[in-house]
Image 1 (cartoon, rainbow, N blue to C red):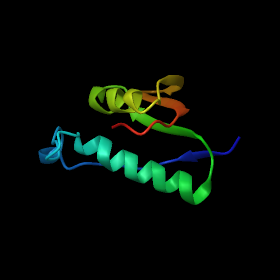
Image 2: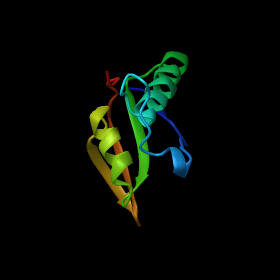
Image 3: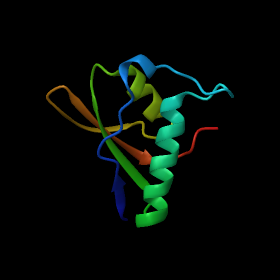
Image 4: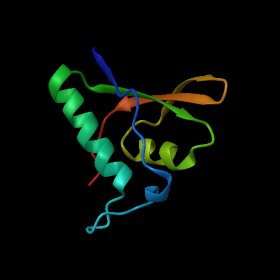
Length: 88
């Protein structure tokens, strides 16, 4: 089964934790759009991400999007994977 990996997504420090007018977290909006585009462009169903172990906000956002299977750890980084589920 093909996989798509989003290499980098970042939000400026002063924008982290920001919510859109409808209450959706900015990180989830950006992640939903980027991953959906990658899947539409390249196909596949499985998404993989590498997140720093101390980045609880990103680990929680990834889990809400279905990336909750920790498949490896290297140093302080955790690779998570799963079938992408767009958050509402």
